[in-house]
Length: 241
Image (tube, rainbow, N blue to C red; front, top):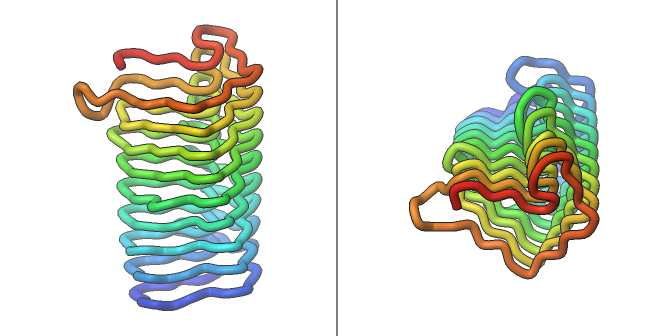
């Protein structure tokens, strides 16, 4: 629908963007943009990806809804972005149904809702961070799922993941029903894990190894309620940390 290339200090405000189809980004395609804001928009039912961001610096999505897109709701590659009060619902992708990050930096996702997003072949139903960093504050993750691991969030391949004051409810995956940290730096505090499920290990959190030798994940001031696994680690499963 929109191709935005090489734009600095631009904004897309107050639009509904729907039913686009393109291999790079069906709704909004951003390439080498800086200080671009997408605000008060409804981005839905696009293929492939609602918003696709490539080699861009500081793309901000604020007060918007991204729903029912195929190929991830938002995908970012070699880019920086912020999500403020964004609702991501019912998006599908191979990895990262809601948000897919590759070699990118999600500076903050604040007061965002991730609901019923699905990773159909890979990790991270709500968010997948691959060689990336991601910070979440006051977010809710509900009924997201992955066919592999990290029903709500997966951080893999030397990523950095931080979560504060958030809530994970009824997310599910084979491993790491809510959160997977695989060879990545991870810390979370003041967060609630409620009724998440896994079939193999770690219904709420699964941690596999560390990004940096001797630097362990820190989990503090957390609540675990009625999480369940058919395998090991009804709430938390850790290995090599």
